[in-house]
Length: 534
Image (cartoon, rainbow, N blue to C red; front, side, top):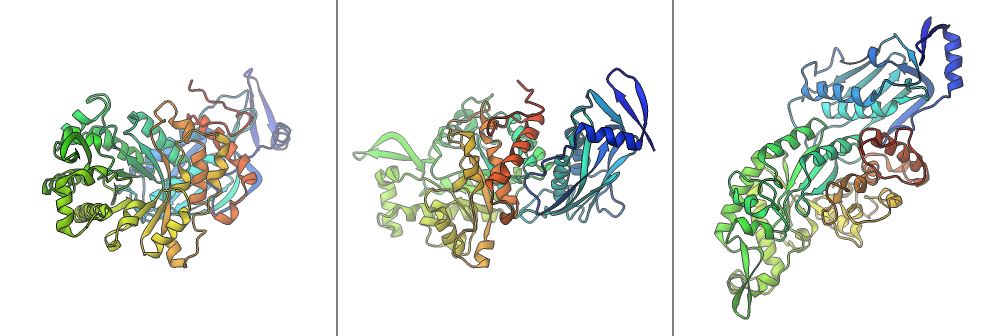
């Protein structure tokens, strides 16, 4: 067997196979640090195979339920080719003529669908001489396997690409692995959201929780109620998300196996809503007369629920996911308490002076509206805490500090599904080296039955927008969010050591940089390919 050694001067020397191997050994046996998040089962050897971009191919297995024409995988093959071979430059390159083929086989042909809460992401990957075999239940699992394969490929000191002999069997520990972005406190351009979706796929996150509106601004441009954004956004033309923008985000996410979960938080956090929808918010009173200020959504008017029904019909027709987040947190009762009409309604309903009952009344009505639209609602834990009739609730997101596992246990004990967010609030400024605090989280470390622990469907990294916009979103999010990603994907027993995780996360952070993601450094050091985007 003969191979060609190409040097930078353009001269060629013919070398036999044994001499070539000797030169490779002299150049140093590098390997990839592995895959992040760590697969459930991962074995790799020092046996490695050179890859040539000109003879590297993706293809479909003969028995695969999906074949050429599957938009999700066809696009993924192009995308991952560019990620695997970002550069063909090098001082010294080995010209490898043998082809290397990655064969992808999928059991279920779900190319034109959207990922959902039951989608399997299981895959197996076998890498050997001249080939890699990737098998998955669904296209979503195939995407996760392609990401793992892309992380296995590395470049030697002289530019040659290699992949080592590897066997992987993998699946996520938790089905819901989300990132929340807040686009109300600071507007995030669509490009920044798309870039975040790219980085989410690299860490195998699968839910984008879009906290799209809040008190400061209402950037969602409603087709039915255009005044909501024209009067409630920071700017009615430049700081909005059109229906086309939303569809673009949803499409970009789908191609990466990511669900898009919208949140329209009420009855609190709605000051921006009132600018474009008069009579929606509660008039506040002082000394028996209106003060000119407004509080939460007015929960006693039939017009409130007619408006919400129409708005959610539009929202649920635009966002295909079966889940919708209804918020329900941090409701200030001061304004409700001051309003004589609300007081009269409270007496009529027998609520006394317990305004948590009024909030529960409102939230139950909103849950019923979205249930009628065949959507499963998620609410913040405040709603669970105040709700006596919890049977109408489905999924509760735990966000408060303190003994958050106590709250997880209470929700699971009530038979409801749980999403854990409390330990993963990344928006507040803090040193990057505190990534370990997001890694050493044990979501199931509470006393409960196996059935109760199965109700913990996952967790979420929250990036609230008080101090975050497009200038610092990526470095504040990455690579710390990746620490949470491994906790939510990988086997807990294999990933307890921060010391073992550190070099792997450091290497993964370098991969993020090479892929154009501005991920902050973890400590002193360097990356072979530093960030080039500045």
